[in-house]
Amino acid sequence: MSHIKIDNNKCKSCYLCVDVCPKKLIKKSETIGKTGEYIAQFCDKNNECIACAQCAMVCPDIAITEVIKS
Amino acid sequence: MQTIFSTPKSIKENSTFTFCPGCDHGVAIKLVAQVIDELNLQEETIAVASSGCSVFLYDSLDVDCIESPHGRACAVATGIKRAHKAQGNNKFVFTYQGDGDFASIGLGESLHSALRGENITAICINNTNYGMTGGQLGPTTAMGQITTTSQSGRNKEYHGFPIKTAEHIALCEGSSFSARVALYDIKNIINAKKQIKKAFEYQQKGLGFSFVEILSSCPTNWKLSPKDSHKKIQEELSKIYPLGIFKDVENE
Ligand SMILES: Cc1ncc(C[n+]2csc(CCOP(=O)(O)OP(=O)(O)O)c2C)c(N)n1
Ligand code: SF4
Ligand code: SF4
Ligand code: SF4
Ligand SMILES: [Mg+2]
Image (cartoon, rainbow over all chains, first blue to last red; front, side, top):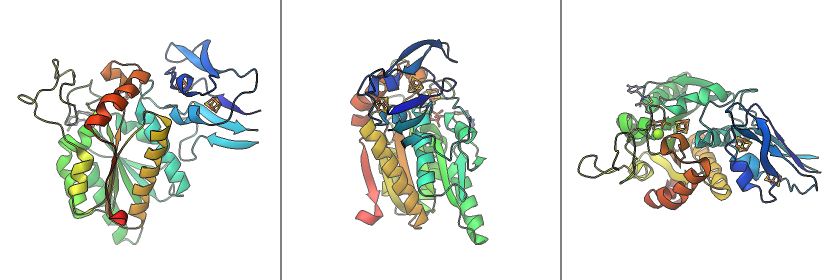
């Protein structure tokens, strides 16, 4: 099952990844990050991630550290 | 299992950018790092940072870096490239500068490096203001654009007209490559990387001054969300500053 890794210490809650994911698999979490805002969270209950890496390409903070296809 | 994306090797482990949330400086540096990795340039690269938010390049990019005074990055890069060449070392030298740094205080150094055909690469982050110092009007601020020093918008009577940097560099006989790219969507991010790679390869081939201007967001000073900043670049700025390749000596 394809997936991404988000580094909670790097995420600055810009939500560009939330908008870009074609499968809408990234959401605002309930965890407050370093900027005082809710950080992004990958939620893929139905294994829909296509490992397109668009989220990692737009992330300005390289907080999406890995995209794995399987 | 296949890794589709991982942090570039040329980004320091555990480093975090100090840019504001959603700032395109981070995307630009990520692309530069990916290109350095793909061309296997990490060991031979010397990056020249400048004054402005661009200076934070050396916090994260894992190559030899030197800081230059405001506007002088191309002059510093010239010295580094030439001194190493005289010693028989072929170093890969590029500058990473803001629009204020490259095209205002440093315009003389920048244009003359291009005119001399200095075999270096310059990356210019055009966010249409002096980001680091609080968003003042710069040489690239668009007509009508509100900044802290143009509170009713840039006007031609008092401020004059903005500069189209990539077009000017293209006019210099010593330049090998000049392009303007943007980072507001996936298609443009992919293209930006392609043009940065080409600019780097032209230096490797010894073709002369290569240049990429990147239309970039400054959400903090524009007082827009990261998403709306990208919309502004797509709908307004890329109309005023057209995207494209203005000089390419290998395709003339
Ligand atoms: C000689 C000199 N004058 C002024 C400054 C103050 N200063 C620091 S950064 C900057 C503007 C940077 O703007 P830009 O190059 O567009 O970079 P940005 O922060 O927008 O990325 C200025 C005026 C300085 N550091 N040195
Ligand atoms: S890799 Fe593609 S599908 Fe998977 S989370 Fe990122 S943007 Fe969404
Ligand atoms: S793009 Fe990066 S920094 Fe922005 S919300 Fe997503 S993971 Fe966080
Ligand atoms: S001031 Fe503007 S250019 Fe500088 S880090 Fe913040 S958003 Fe980026
Ligand atoms: Mg600027």
